[in-house]
Each structure stands twice: as C-alpha cells, then as structure tokens.
Length: 221
Image 1 (spheres, helix red, strand yellow):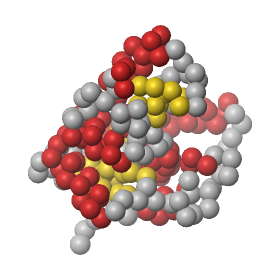
Image 2: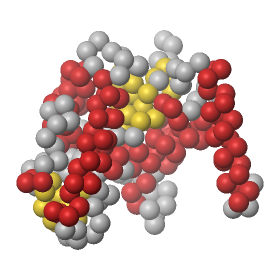
Image 3: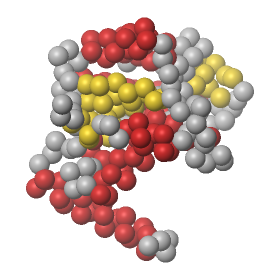
Image 4: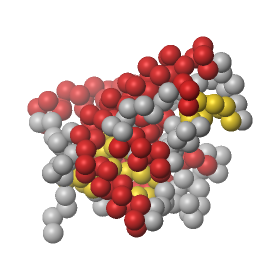
C-alpha cells in the first residue's frame, strides 16, 4: 500500500513538546529534500499553551470560540490558568501578571492563533494532526470524530505520540522529550509541500542562504 502524503502538519498539544519535535523533524527534513519545506507546518494555538484533552475537544467542538474569556482566567503558582477549561498560559502572560492590564494583548494573540488553527484544521489539504500523550481508545475515536466533523470528507491522520517512558534527550530540557522516539514515530508519515517546485526554489534558496549566514556568524560548519 503506498504511503500517504500529507501537505500540512498541525500540532494539537498537549504541551509544546509536540511543536518542538514537529519543527525539529521537518526543519531537518527540509535541509535534505527539495520537496520538503516549512510551508507544511502550521503554528497553532496549542503550540503555546498546555491543553488537557477535554479542553482540546472543547476547542474543536466550539469552533475555537469562547475559550479564553477573562472571567474564566485565574492564577496558579504565578501563572495564568483557565479555571473553566484547565489550559495553562505560560507564554501569553509574564509571571505574576496583572490580568486586567495584560489580557487585551493576550486575547488578541490567542484569537489570531485560533483563527490560524481553525483555517488549518478545515483546510482541504491532506493533513497530519499530531498530539503528544496517550489517549484511551474511546478518547482517540472521540478526538478523531471531532476533527472529522470540522473537515468532512477531507483526508487526515491522527498521530498520538507518547514518549513518557523514554529517557530524555536533554535532561536539562525535560519538555523536549526523546528526540529519537519522536523521529521514529514521525518517520512513517510522508510530508511534502503542495506548492510547485518553481515556486519553492526561490524560498528554499533564501532559507538556505539565511541558514549558512547564521552558521558563519556563529562559526558553525
């Protein structure tokens, strides 16, 4: 059976471990394959917050609306938490913030990312959805159904990657998980841009020039 090709990758949390490994995997792949670019990757609202499974379902079922209301926010150990849905917002606010002062900017950013995520979820392109963490079989079916409801008839796959029993690649960066485990889990999916090569080549050339310039600045070869 031929391997299915996906033209978009969407991270679904539950923390930024998924985002980190998706970007690390396909940024490296971009350097070794002309058909692979970061055009396939989408930054989502789930990349920047901790999102428990029930909250993820609510985002999908509510079409990403009403999930970041000021009345629902509170504080936990100096961080902002959504007391209604359980999402933790470490990157949206400074430590120990004045919610009234910082909410408008955080809300604008959250709404922008929700709109990007909604467009990616409903995009007709074949899409790979990736979430860090294990789910029970009925939860996995439930999540699959919630995604399918937003993109009826459109091809997609759901990858649940749980490396909690694996040694950390970097003990000083626990949130990154095990890189080898993620690489092996993601290797079964073929990801390529749907953009024609004649359009990709100038972008790839610019990306490579910037990468080489960065190596020169930092004396890395």
